[in-house]
Length: 161
Image (cartoon, rainbow, N blue to C red; front, side, top):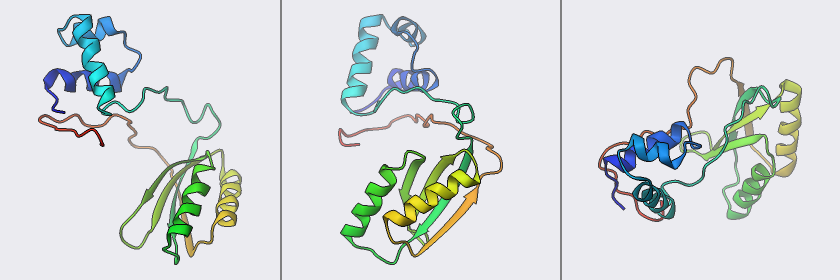
């Protein structure tokens, strides 16, 4: 699927406010409502728009402490990877997980209320799967945070991502 300037503008607008009414979206991209709605449906069907969600304030939910956890393993089997994947999926405080290149095998972003709360998560993780090394870094200050992705011109997207 290729995206034109209107598609890109729609994506920018929705990333800023997914609750924007179709009438306002259409007006902001100089379309009538029906063609605007059809474009949005096409972007959803192609998987460009994966979901529309509410972003919550972590502090107000009592999980205002962010911990980055670098995990190393000496077990590189499908069985271990499946167990690890299930373990991190079962811990709601683990909000992001990346398999990495280099010395760190996995990088996790964990949100908790405080150090004691993190210790509970740490114990849950090391009980679930054997780990070679775990290194935790507490974020002192959030300098930048955005869920909005850059919407660049001339992007061609396939249906599988």
